[in-house]
Image 1 (spheres, rainbow, N blue to C red):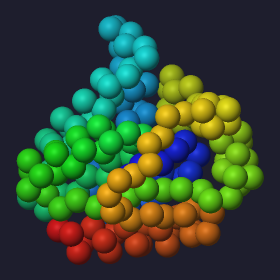
Image 2: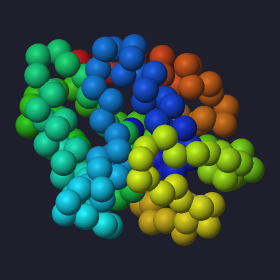
Image 3: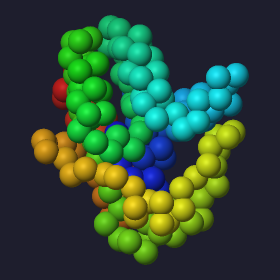
Length: 164
């Protein structure tokens, strides 16, 4: 799952993972842990994603599903997640979560609190200025401004089951 901060990725990812008894792999949590570690990796840069790819690969056994929850802002990271799925011969559903209503998106970003120890949430300005490359391939787009988290999760679960 990909999308800018505050679009609803984590809310939806948790519902998807619960629905399929899958692994919810959240890059924010990994990056915060790396920053808190004795190594003090800050900024975590690609380290969080590298750990995420490895943990996803370890969990893609049998019929297990991994719900990778990250901004996933560039083709390089999107391609890396796809490579993990291919290497494990796992189905892949690429999902982009958007929030088409800027006022709703801004309200979410400015009104949320971190649920991860050590995670500093971005400001609205950070979100607006963040690098986020347009997608160059097909993906399932979910608009959290017009679709409930439950309906979005149901669509993703259906797509994942079809891809398995």
